[in-house]
Image 1 (cartoon, rainbow, N blue to C red):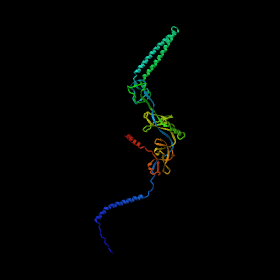
Image 2 (image 1 turned 120 degrees about the horizontal axis):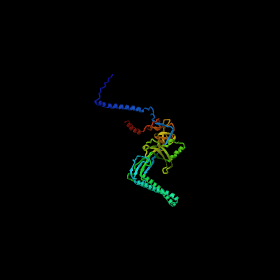
Image 3 (image 1 turned 90 degrees about the vertical axis):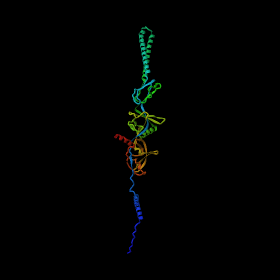
Image 4 (image 1 turned 45 degrees about the horizontal axis):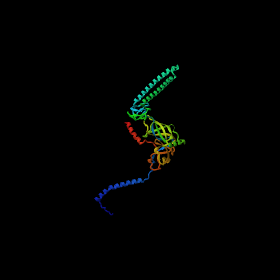
Length: 416
């Protein structure tokens, strides 16, 4: 047996130092390779299944009688309006009302200098008294001459002259009475009265102004606004199409609600009190092709002002079998209106529809859908792959963000 001795070789200090320096790097590299190897195995592993279909909010269609509302532009007009004008000449001495206040019919508004008309009235009364005195004298003389002429004590000529003088006296009295009445009218006109009850605007003249009856100087304007008229127009073509649809039984009259109108203010709010449709004009405006309609609206709170621009919502007919959809469910474009309908296989498919008028925040669908179909109203952003299956869930309307934001300060204020 041959024994070979292995020499005991010890590393040099330089080798040992280099080994200790590289050891952490080797361990870090080994850990990184192990991690990458594990990730590679997971990435290479086949998926256990397809991801679940996204949930989308759907509306199940149903037929119902849906009123067709039109929204038309209109202007507010007072039921009664009176221009207060001067009916005699003179200087305005005093204004007897508060501008912008409510006045009653017969209430004094202005006082015009009445001194000349008072003098004319008194002069007319004096003339009447003189005429009555002359008549009394002429009547007495005719009465005295009557038995004398029968006894032939005087000539018939004298008796006829006495009777004629009596009749002239009667005519003078009648003329004097008319003069007194005219003077009294002018005297009364010096005190200007309101012809109607209503709200009076600003005064168009001030104290010291000279007004004229010949020019009919306007002093103020009184408008009755406890109820107002709203005049609005509709295209004659729309009226024709509506009548044709009702004649073809596509639409039907909406009954008593057809006579009611709802007023929408400039800020979009709707008045709580509906108005009543009074009439539809029988002629078409040759310049605009519009038909004029008028409604009377109660205005006890004075929100509607004469000349104000408003929108009028009017139910003229109803669809017997209409479908209502949220406006966000309908895609409107120049080529037509479409919706996404979930089929039996769970895949959404576009469907062209015919949309009528709007009813609140919903569209009235006239054609293109059947009862019981599921129309997507929410979750469009979840459908990344066109034609991929979706999971339909009932759609629940949510309040608008700005409504919630505006309600929060009110709630906090109420809690305080």
